[in-house]
Length: 436
Ligand code: SDX
Image 1: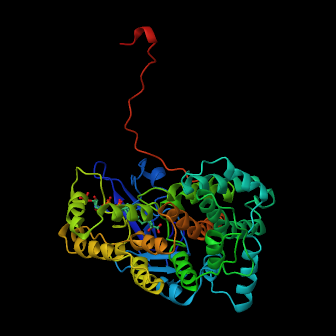
Image 2 (image 1 turned 45 degrees about the vertical axis):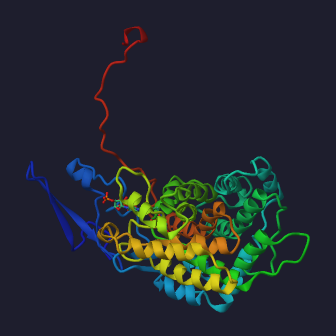
Image 3 (image 1 turned 30 degrees about the vertical axis):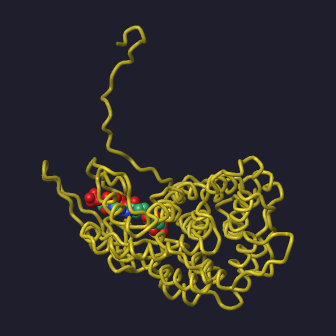
C-alpha cells in the first residue's frame, strides 16, 4: 500500500487542449478499488476535480469498514456482518470498531464495565427536556441534548489527549441509549427511568424505554436479542453522509460531542437514516397490496418526487446484506412475539413486485437497511418517530470510531472542498436610487 508520489503505479491525465500531461500516484488499499491521489492536481494543472455528491471521491483512508456494493459485502475490521450479527454482540462490535480487534474475555468484561458505568447522564440534563414541547420530534431533541453534552464534560474535550478521546467515546456510546430512552419517555409523558447496571446494553435500553417506576419490568429476551442485532446492523457503514459530516466537523478540531450532534442532524434526513420512519409511513399509506402498483408507478414517475422509501443505495447495487438479515429477523421476531403485522406481508409483496419491474432492475434498486427495520421496531412497541433515534444510537459507535481514527491520523488537516464557480463576474455596487 503506497502513500507517496514515488508510487510505482501512476495515472496520467492529459489536457486535450494543451497536450500537457500530469502523472498522479495510484494508492491501493487492502481490498477494493484503487484510488488516484489528486492532492497535487491543482498545483500541477490549475484544475480542480468536480464530484458534487462524491460518487467517485474517496475522502480518507480507513481501516474500520469495507463495503462491496456489487457483491453485497459489509465487513467491520474484516469480520462479515453476517457473522457479527449471528455470533457477536453490539458491545463486542463497539470494542471491535474502537480498538480494531475482537476482545479477549477480560478485555470485553473491562470494556463492558466502562460503558455500563457511564450510562447515567448529569441530572441537569433532565431540565433540557423541559424546554421542548412533548410533541417535539425525538431527533430534534437528540440534536440538542447530545450537542449539549460538551457543556458537561470539560474534562474530556482535549481531542489530542488519547485518554480523553477514549473517555469521550465511552461516554457517548454509554449515554446515547439513556438520552434516546429519555426522548421517548418525554414524548409519552412518563417519568425517565434511570439505567440499571445489572442489565446488558440492549436490555438496559429496553428497560429505560418500556419500564415504569410503578412496577418491576422484565425485559423480553426476544426483544433484547432483536434490539442487539439491530444495533449491530446499524453500527457503521463506511463514509456515508452522516459519518462524512462527523469527519468534516471533527477536522476543524471541534469537540467529539459537537461532532456527533452534527452526525445526528445529517442522519435525520429521509434520504438517509430518516428513511426507516418514512418506510413505515409509506407502507401505512399504501395500506393494501392492491395499491402497490399505484405507488410503484409514482416511484417511476419523474414528475413525482415520491420515491420508494427503503429502496436503493448509493453503494449497494446488489442486495444490502443488512436488509437480508433484517428480513429474516422480522419474520422471526413477529412469529416469536405472536404479532401478526400485515405490514410485513405488504413489505414483502412490495419487494417482490418492485424487483420484477425493469425500472428497479435496470437501476439495481434493492431494499436497503431501512426497509425492514421499522417493522421489527414497531412490533417491539416503538413509535415510528423513534426509529431514526435508534439508528443514531447504534451509529454513534461508528461515528466516534471514525472520528477517533481521523484524529489519530498523523496528517490531520481541516477538510476544505473547493467549487466550480458559476455566479456573476465582478460588477460595481448599485446605489438604491440607481436600481430599477
Ligand atoms: C441509508 O450511504 C450509506 O451507507 C447510507 C446508509 C448507512 O448505513 O449509513 O446505508 C443508510 O441512508 C440507506 C438509504 C436510505 N434512504 C432511502 O431508502 C430513501 C430512498 N432511496 C433514495 O432516495 C436513493 O436510493 C438513495 C438516496 C438511497 C441513493 O441515492 P443515489 O445514489 O443518489 O441514487 P440516485 O438518486 O442517483 O438514483 C439513481 C436512479 C435515479 O433514476 P434515473 O435518474 O437514473 O432515472 O435510481 C432512481 C433515481 O430516480 N432511484 C429511485 C430510488 N432510488 C433511486 N427511484 C425510486 N425509488 C427509489 N427509492
